[in-house]
Length: 256
Ligand code: PEP
Image 1 (tube, rainbow, N blue to C red):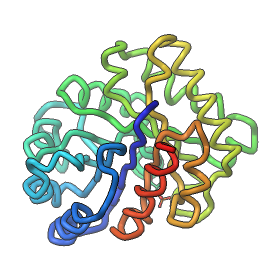
Image 2 (image 1 turned 120 degrees about the horizontal axis):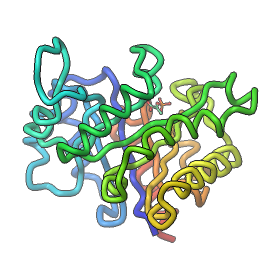
Image 3 (image 1 turned 90 degrees about the horizontal axis):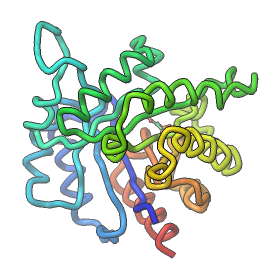
């Protein structure tokens, strides 16, 4: 069984003190820590203090929301793998639709970021997903095949182990309109087949998360979808009590 993974993507929310307060409150929650992986992806300015607060804890991993593909250089406003690692970061989100759509990141940019992150020792939460127009036009598999296939062609099987896939239909992110259990099951199945094409034996070990308006109210039903190995949560991850309840729910459902 793949251990369930729950990722918080705080986007451009929370100051360092608010972030550390969240960590302190989460640490005090009664969760089945051994049976779930929790990753908090915070703004850059919070990472150093969160890293200090998590040092030696071992139950919660720290993640960033972006990375540059070069190791260093004249790239104003960018951040490198080594800078993130110095704060205790082990994970980075790459390919989030907000970066693809709002900041113009292409499949090629995204692949370069993943390769650098992995080569420098980070693990990657790789986001893929279709627009509503693409879904309505029956192009979901094609779009996911391009987004994921382009990357898989560059990876070795060892590197694949550093990858977690997040299926995030763009129309479900921040809209309050989650994909249905049937849509998620079908799409995760498609993603698993895409991975199998390049990595027939390792594909079953790759965790595929769902992201898009997951909250306390719908997380039980979505956890029941056997193809779902975890969640990537935006809005609902900002509240530690709601986040804790979602973690508790998926842990219980997946370990039944
Ligand atoms: C996200 O930011 O990846 C996300 C899924 O956001 P939300 O949960 O708010 O839809």
